[in-house]
Image (cartoon, rainbow, N blue to C red; front, side, top):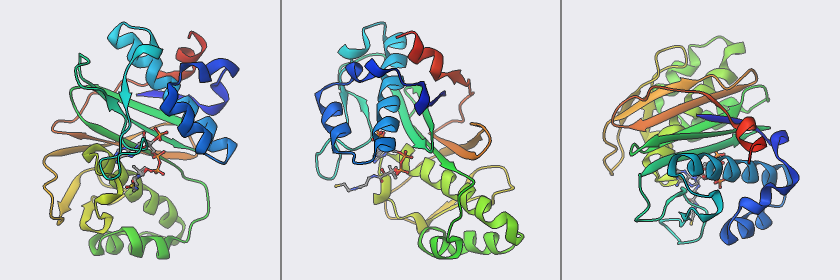
Amino acid sequence: VWLARTGDAEPDLWQLLDGDELNRRATLRRPADRDRFLVGVAVTRLALARYLRRPPTTIPISRACPRCGRPHGKPRLMPGVHPRIEWSISHAGDRVVVAMALEIPLGVDVEVSTRALPVDQLARMVLSDQEIGMLKRLADKERARGFLRFWTRKEAILKASGQGLALPLRSLTVSGPDDAPRLVSWSGSRPLGQLALQDLDVGSGYLASLASVGKSLGLVILDGAALLRRH
Ligand SMILES: CC(C)(COP(=O)(O)OP(=O)(O)OC[C@H]1O[C@@H](n2cnc3c(N)ncnc32)[C@H](O)[C@@H]1OP(=O)(O)O)[C@@H](O)C(=O)NCCC(=O)NCCS
């Protein structure tokens, strides 16, 4: 798991991006979104360059959305590139997390844990009835953190599945915020298969979780800032 911050970006980092990535970056209106996207792509390309032993700009990456074909979906290596490295990117605040594994699809999600949230309203939209019950049993001051813990676990699962928001969040139940992370149940129409969940420590003020298809992964936390500096 590579961790970086938007402040780690060097001015010439954009040169690592391919045409689709430059276009995508140009469509992002807020400078903070552009910076997060840039650092996510740069960390991804530099890490892949190490594992695949080829220059970062020559690695063919597809972001085609399975629903509309536009380049805003889950990034993956084009067919024919080996070894088959899987990865998932998440960004929030100034934090960028890129989780990678060999041949194991995975999903990562990071959220800022310190902002005020309309927890009850959001919970009705994204939590299952069982999760709402668990949330209500938390002390008032624990609710926002509890909600976000459900959220990072659920979104990590969405991202590992590759289906994104096409997967109805309310039909997914994960364990309570203070319990060991696990997928409790899934009542959607498409099979989800075996998924392992774990929470990640990405620093104070943030919550993050990682889901992997099949087995649980041994985690190594790596310094994305050093990777960006050495490019
Ligand atoms: C996947 C998703 C839930 C994550 O959103 P988020 O919490 O706002 O943002 P995060 O920072 O945690 O993750 C964003 C990253 O998820 C990845 N991603 C995008 N779609 C994905 C998908 N279907 N599955 C897994 N990962 C996905 C991308 O790498 C993206 O970062 P990047 O664009 O900088 O490369 C959301 O982007 C999504 O569902 N998108 C699809 C929406 C959709 O279906 N739209 C209709 C298209 S026609």
